[in-house]
Structure formats: structure tokens, C-alpha cells
Image 1: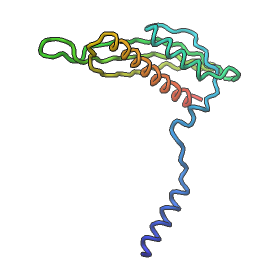
Image 2: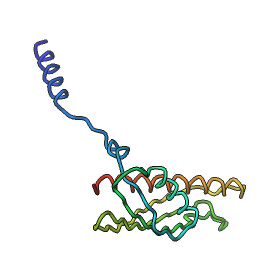
Image 3: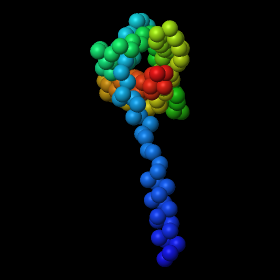
Image 4: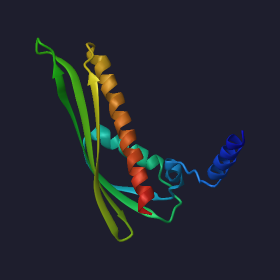
Length: 152
């Protein structure tokens, strides 16, 4: 009984002295004015990423970040069945960023992949692919914001 009480007190003491801070806590505190200077590549991906950047830009901020990026989107055949018809696809998005803040410049690439099954209905497959593009653009934008939080 004494061991249990000691263990509870020790656990409470250790846990109360630890500082818990979520990984994404700095992401919402970004106070940058983001200016997109140039973008090229896949039009749909560029528009989605640019919309995410503009949504999170603070127009009244003194800190200005210039971003240019180039996106490459590809949809590759991942698998075929015995008859030779396509069963699985893999989408791949690679975005190269150039970030300029004050006199510093940083280049890096972000890569996202997603595998999915072929849908018989072409209209449904196209809508599903657009949804995948939107999700990949959101994922890349989130990774970019995490990178911007580190730059400070």
C-alpha cells in the first residue's frame, strides 16, 4: 500500500513538472505577410497551394516572406491485373520552394504520394482525383507552415 502511494505521488510530481507543448502550436502564431512572387508547374496544384498561403498570410504584419514555387504532379500506373487493365494508380506531387526573408534565402522540396484504386466511372474517378489533389496541396501547405515556423 505504501509503495502505491509513493508511486502515485512520484508520478504526479514528475508529470506536473513537465511542460506539454503541442507540435503544431507555433503554426497558428505565424505572423508573416506572405507574398507569392512566382509559381509554375501544375496549374491546379499551384492554385490550391497559393490559396492556402493567402489564407494564412497576415496583411498587417511587418515581417514579409517572398515565396516562389514550382510544382510537378504525376499520376502513374501502380498495378495491372492479368488482363492488362489498370487497377491501381499512384499520384506524386513534388513542390520546390524558394523562400526569401530579409536577406536570407532557402530552397527546399516537399514530396507527397498517394495510392488509390481505379474507379470504373470516369466522372467519379476525376472527382476523386481532384479531392486527392486538394488533400495533397493541404498537406504540402501544412509542411510549409511548419518549415516557416522553424525559420523565424
